[in-house]
Length: 620
View 1 (cartoon, rainbow, N blue to C red):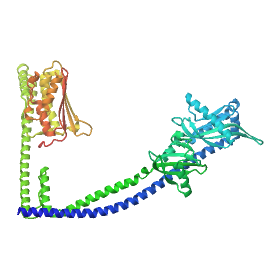
View 2 (cartoon, rainbow, N blue to C red; view 1 turned 90 degrees about the horizontal axis):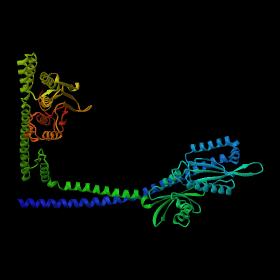
View 3 (cartoon, rainbow, N blue to C red; view 1 turned 60 degrees about the horizontal axis):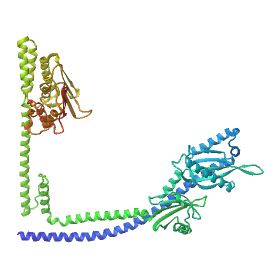
View 4 (cartoon, one colour; view 1 turned 180 degrees about the vertical axis):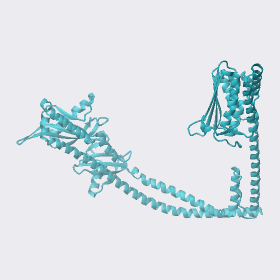
C-alpha cells in the first residue's frame, strides 16, 4: 500500500512538472514577442519625443536670448536718438550740465530696474568722462584694470563701427553678478547730429546679465554631460559655458560640418561625433543675426528613457512569467492538495497558531491523518485555556496578598499617641485619633480591589490628621487634587503606604519643622497618564541609597516585596514602596511604576506614574 502511494505521488509530481514546463514555454514565447514589439515602438516614440522636445527647447532659448538682444538695441537707440543726451554726453563733467546728467543717470537706473536681464549701462565721452549705472562699487585693483581695458576696447569698436551697433564678448563687472565673468555687450558710438555733419561725442555700452545668459545656456545643456554654445556662421564660438572656448573655431569639427549638411536637408537635429563619442546635436538659428545656438548631449543619455522602458518591459515580463508559473503550479498541484493542506496546517502550528484545522474532504488514510491532527490541536487549545486561567488566578492571588500586607508600624505609633494623650492631658484629641483609626480600619478591610482617588485622598486626610495630632505645629501637610481626576479608579491603599514611608524614613528622623505635600495631576494636557507626587523635607537619602532602592523596586519577583536595606547600613524597611511598585506593575503594566529623587538632609520626592484605566481592577 505504501509503495503504491509513493509511486502515485511520484507520478503526480512528474505530471505537475510537465504541466509547469508547458506553461513556461507558452508564456515565455508570448511574452518575448509582446515585449520586443513594445520595446521597439516605445524606443522609437521616446526618441522622437526627445528630439522634438530638444528642438523646441533650443529654439525657445534662442528666441529668449535674441529677444533680450533686441530689447537692448531698442534701449540703445532710445539714448542714441536723444538730442539732449548727445549734448550731455559731449559735456560730461561740466557743472552746468549736472542736472541733465543726473536725469539721464536716473533713466539708466530705471532701465536696469525695469529689465532684470540688463546688467550695466555706461556712457563715455571723448574727454574721458563717464556716466555709469550698475557697476560694482569698490572695484579691486585687478577688476579696475579689467574695466579700463574693457572701456578702451568698447571705444575702439564703437568708433570702428561708425555709429552702427555691434555685439562683443565682455567681462561683466555688474553688481548683479556674483563674480566677474564673460557676457555679451552691445556697444554703439554716440554722435551729435546736425544738418551738416555727424560728430562722434562718446560711446554707449549695455551688458546682458552674465548669470542670466549662462542660465539660458545651462537650460539647453539638458544633461550633466551636455554642452551649449553660441556660434557664428563661420564656426567661431561667440559665447559658451566654458570661457576658454570663447573665440575658438569649430569650423573643422564634425559638429559644425554635420550642421551644414543637416541645414541643407532642413533638419534641426543630427548625430555627430565629439571626442570619439556619439552625440545628438540640436541647433536653432537667430532670426536677426547670423548666429546659431547649438546644444549637444550624449546619445546614451538621450536614449536613457528608451533603455529604461526596455528594463521595465523586461521586469514586467519576468513578473508576469513568475505569476503565470505560480498559477500553473497551483493548477498542477490539485491532485496533491490534501497533503499540501495538511503540511500547511502543520506549519501554522509550528508558528504558534493552534486555531487551525484541516478540512476533512475524504475518509481515506489522508483523511484519518487530518482527523488526528484536528484532535491534537483541540487538545492543545484546551490545555492553553487551562494554563491561562490558572495564571489569571495566580495574578489575582498575588494582588490580594500584596493588598493585605499592611505594616503595623503606623498602628503602633497611633495607639502610643492615643495612650500618651489620654494619660497625660486627657485631651479631646483622643476622640479625633480614635475616630480616624476606626475610619481607616473600616476602609482597609472593606471589600473590592479598587477605589476612587477621592476615597484615597479622604484616607490620606485621616492619616495625616492623626500625624498632625502627634507632631502638632511641627508638621504641615498639603494635598492637591486635579478636579478632573476625582472619580478615577485606582488600586485601594495605593497612596497611604507612600505617605507612611515618608514619615517612617524621613519625617521621624528630622528635627524642627516637618512638611509633607501630595500632588495628584495629569502627566500632560490630554494625556491618559496620572502623576502622583509625594514630597517631604525629611532626612533624605544618599545617592548610593537611592540607587539601591531603585534597583530593588525594579525587581519582578514576589520575593522582592520586602526591601532589606541592611546591606547598606540601613534598618529593615517596611513593604511600603515595594508593595506599591509591585501592585502598579500588576494593574497598569511594565510602562508604569515609581521614580525616586532624594538629597541627603533635604528630603525625598516619590513619583507614581499610572494610567487613568486599570488593566482588570475588579469592581469598585
